[in-house]
Length: 405
Image (tube, rainbow, N blue to C red; front, side, top):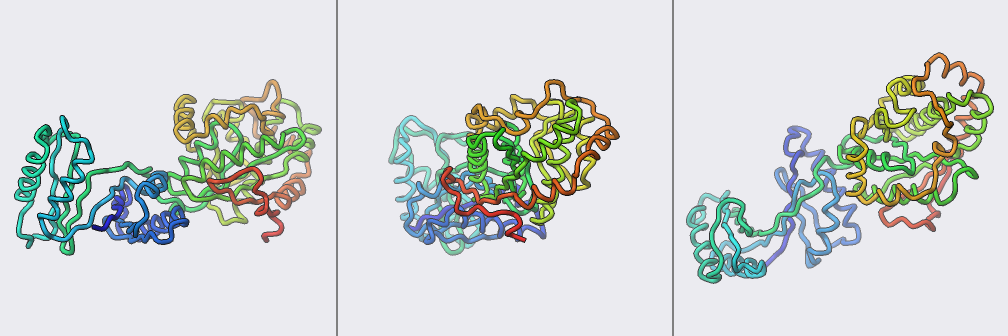
């Protein structure tokens, strides 16, 4: 008896002519997640995807499939010869493992091979009677039973399954293009990264560090947050931007209440250049409207002035409690609330301007050598590959941006 995993697509099923591109990307993402199991074979089909386990215990593969975007659900299925006595034997064994006494069940049969000797009703009755005879304490219930036995009669074989496991949904990472996401050490931006990836975006994380004002622990914490999010895409690139010089220059030249506005404008310029060098299509961030001074609509107008690149804000209209709920679900919340301040917090003025004027922001910024400051920050940005298994000592893959181009 052969065991496969049957993967269902969900939203991918609506993609029409582009469906093959989406399913192929999903297959590649699954192979990437299962790279330590080379014996598992992935077969994308039009309506479903099959994974031949080739002896690998399904218990090892199932947890690796759960976070992969693009999978609506999946099931372990048993591939059987088209002999009903053998099917009955397997069904009785599987039902028996579910501790059936006192539970309800139904048989749900599909038959794409219409030449098979029994039709769906006959199969349902044959297998249902066998289950009732073997387990007298079980009873039939057609709506929301405890146990659903699915039987699929194909031309080549019969498939039997009992278990349906929910997947992560969404679109396969990489099908919607690449974005540069501004990742702080807070609660919101890791959630924004997760939501962007769920819509198929490949995320590259851009983090601004200001040593000695920000600590090494703050940087490690943010990389650990990136590792939590990397579970959903296999791995991601992490860009550490040296921001100390820029913040010191801003502090010297700009009135206190405009510090945050000008600082965010500089961050956006740098992120946009990194995006362009890495062939990204958009910028993403964790801004939530009205949450802090730099996230009012007036502030966004003053800050967005420096770029025409689309800016995606996945959590823009969400309540903080809703954002926290997702952060807890994806296991970033406890990391995010660790007391290591990022550069925005360290340099935050006591009374930032909540409705900054664009003309004022441009005027104060003109006191800086913007082009040179941005150039040096981009050239000295360090790039690192972050995997779900990231630990703080992994530094051998770090490389400066100017070494890449």
